[in-house]
Image (cartoon, rainbow, N blue to C red):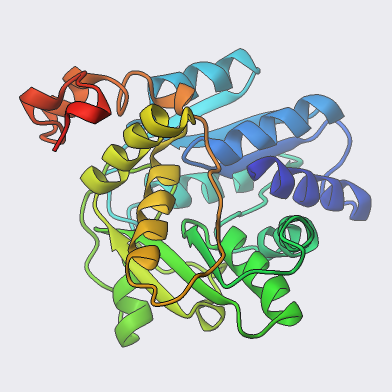
Length: 294
């Protein structure tokens, strides 16, 4: 999914002169946007510098290095106002590197626009316009906001449900108008520790909040029951779909997105030792087939 915003942002910047040929792209990313930026940077002969939380999965970091990305690792537990934190560090680097372009995926609504122009129409076509619910994780907010805008333009009755992660500030803000107090979580790609500009909360009808455990176990269940090896944010989306489906009183068409590959999490959520270490996997369930579980 993130290759869509990478292409849209980088090629727009090249077209209007904000980014010059041979220039530098600097961004803060949990890994998936960084991968998309790296792909487009290689295609256009650009240097790519990514600020990534040190806690990001080893597989993602290895993939980025393999593609020539210059990684700047930061402590993901630093408060957002700290100068060495994730978003602050990327902005500082962009300002210090001559010719650098900072797409700012968290605050630049070109992120949303990319999905309004591509993902939204694609979903509408594939579903022949027959959609009752769109359930989607909320990270930068670009995907859910852009798709929601398009779908609701076609049919205002489409209900948009966001899946946030426990520890993020988004859910409290959506429900009360006041950001919650951020807490540490392990799920990559969803939520944030501060309010950012891309989420268009007014386009969202409901927001659910998933725990790390619920997201990771749903991802593992998806792999074993459907043969789809997806990441933790996809597990969160599946969990959200199940919440919506469980309360339906009539047949409905629910659309969701599985936006990341599980191959990037083989050392974490698909590793029984890692899951047990963090208290997500009871001893009796490690490696047990789905049919043997309660």
